[in-house]
Length: 445
Image (cartoon, rainbow, N blue to C red; front, top):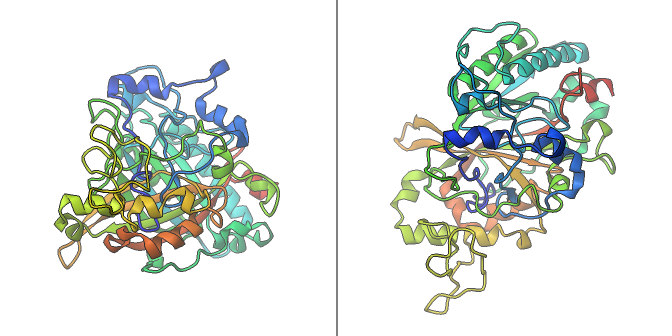
């Protein structure tokens, strides 16, 4: 999307298998019983490179490392018992399959909290998150909302905004990659619905599980940090389709086809930070997250005939195949940007989304994207307040999101149908060390 995502490479990934297959997928492990997420972490920079197109060459999460599965029990079926390990080299909720539901929120530190207060909060959040992701009640402030649910693939991911470092007396440890994003053409960002000192992404395959986890974190933060904003999103529920297929966004577009895969060379180097250069040592194994709330102008989009929608994107709407591909080619057919139509014009127009977002046109910039749809009713003018909660993880936004967004916002035909209304940039620390807490590398390193 206009500076946000390549619809053919962005939002989400193929549906996970039906419920009876879900546990097996989540239980995917590598040699020695390690989860595939852990193996990806130890593989370091030798994983997936390049490219994908889309808001910054968004990375598809197809074939991503999946969480381990709990034994089936009284908490429910496969969806309820699936568990994502909380600890690892990287935080959960980055390379793991996008869940059916998400709660996003940001908090601002109270005046005078300082470094010690931040440490205490992160320790409390870590203890709660570790228990909740295992399907256990929190030690404090558990309201029993999710008492009869399993972990439901719950993940809790935490990030730090730029202002946090000054407030906590850590200005000398603020990473250069947190420099403010430039203003892009067409931006209409509401600061009240973006930014923030602390960011949390809470995903699960059950809405009550996500709301419960957020409520616990809110109450643990009381007096230390106040919630600044909150957004809820959704994706296709695992098992909703008869077979694993790439999902669609609210424009009805298959969304997530050509994203890079975690088993491709250079993946980790594109997504996760490594010590060296101007990256601080405490951020090694962490990542940067760009958040954007992007409203889709659905009334205008839906007024277009399907063939015009296809020309805006550059793909057939029915099967996701690139324009110019033969019948039956399918969404994974290679994109031929030189293909011509019967009249000799380009089959994929010059301002088509997949052309402008092609990695070859963006220096190979790539991001790993976990987008969710949102629909918050109608605006005063009667149009839908609906669109995409764009989440892109990358090793350096200065070489990922920023250059691609700049190009898409100026030359992408899809930009006419999108409004960027909120955003944020956060540094995500690596996973909590054994026996430690999220952010310990920053606060005690």
